[in-house]
Length: 83
Image (cartoon, helix red, strand yellow):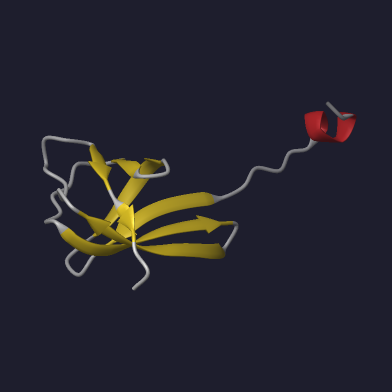
C-alpha cells in the first residue's frame, strides 16, 4: 500500500437511497439485487429509483421492487429495469 494512501485524510461522501412516488428511504447497504434500509420504512411493491451519490456525483437506476418493503424487514429485493 502506498504511503499516500495511508496518510490521506480523504473520505468519500456516500449517500444511498431508494426514491419512490411516496417516499425517500435512506439505505445502509446496496448489493447487486438487494438493499438494506438504514431506518424502518414501508414501501409497496412497484417502481422506484435506486440512487447513489458519491462526492456529489449521482448514479441512478430504475428498479422494480417485486415484494416491496415491510416495516418489520430491513432488507428488500429489487430488479433493475430499463424504464
